[in-house]
Length: 129
Image (cartoon, rainbow, N blue to C red; front, side, top):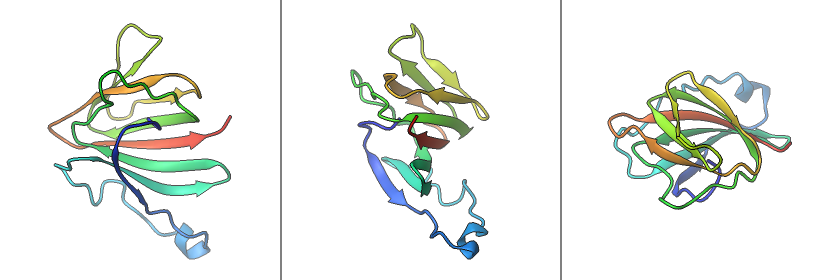
């Protein structure tokens, strides 16, 4: 999910202070239910690890495009529905809220679909291995 998908990228990470570290942020707040583009928000980034919230509203990876996974990524679906297709598997992997998986660096994949009727909210952790 780290590749060529287009969307709006925002950084809402907090500064590295004790006060900021205790600020509560709701992962479901500020979601546009009919956004035209996916929204990628960096929540925290430190020591080569990036945590981001991704909100999809029916988007997927363009047909014929594969994400080469330049970094490993652990992803969980918090809300909505989606399917990921991996180049090395015959069928897409469908995800429901609470499902999580690890996409290892170099494993080609794509977002086959996300639910068009409701926002799909992902939490992704990108890291080098």
